[in-house]
Amino acid sequence: MNAPVIAVQHAAVGYDARTVLRDVSLTVTAGEVVAVLGANGSGKSTLIRAVLGLVPLSAGSVTLFGRPLRRFRQWERIGYVPQRLGAGGGVPATVREVVASGRLARRGILRPPGAADRAAVDGALRAVGLADRADDAVATLSGGQQQRALIARALAGHPELLVLDEPTAGVDATSQEAFAGALREFVDGGGTVLLVAHELGPLRPLIDRAVVVHAGEICHDGPVPEPAGHHAEPDHDHVHPHCPDEPVGLWSN
Ligand SMILES: Nc1ncnc2c1ncn2[C@@H]1O[C@H](COP(=O)(O)OP(=O)(O)OP(=O)(O)O)[C@@H](O)[C@H]1O
Image (cartoon, rainbow, N blue to C red; front, side, top):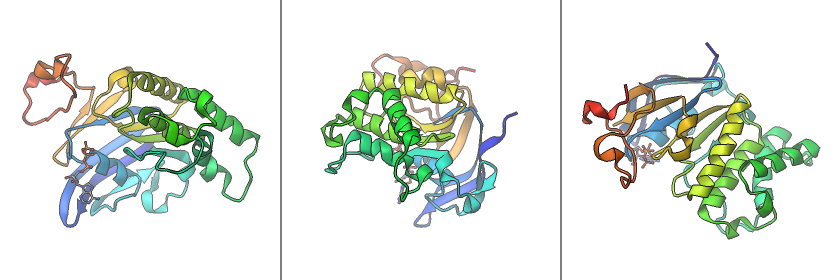
């Protein structure tokens, strides 16, 4: 078995004394692509924020690349795309500048970018299909294209682990396909992925395993659940398995 890249053991997280995650355990090994699914507010974002040490644990532990989170320093090994950051925000940066900022953890702020940095930025722009927009202001991109720029920024750092919070939410079909292609390249190169999603769409064939969060607990860890019943209807807008309540037929196995 491959080495664990992420190991969460019996983790609990609360906001203002309200427990949001309880007794969550999750292991992601090198080369795996794991999707975190679940209804709105179930605790998916909180789970990945806890993995990255962005919210404190009230119980349990997290290790990254075999190191306890509090002693982990190699952040250049991880690319993180938070939920709906919005790369534009009135900042007059070009797409290339935003993507190049993803190299900072690797090269250090005081060292000027070298050929390897430029090649990494160009490669990431190509991977998400934004090479032709490199010199445009980010604010002039569509929401989906801005999301792709953020993904390119994460890819430019040549991480080993990508953590993505709803990377394709509100993103058009073309951007979703472009993103799926970039992710496939990343995975083919040996990368590991943990992503939160409501709709897997074109990402579906890439996912090795799904973890379903329900009311702050992991209620399924295994094959991607197939939509069934009304979830399977073409016009149903999203898949959000509710483990305890859903009829058995929701699951594919
Ligand atoms: N910073 C915060 N302070 C207080 N409560 C929070 C905070 N962030 C999230 N919560 C609460 O924690 C619960 C889980 O939120 P979380 O964002 O993890 O859910 P989610 O499954 O990612 O939801 P969604 O699918 O809507 O993004 C929700 O009830 C939310 O209101």
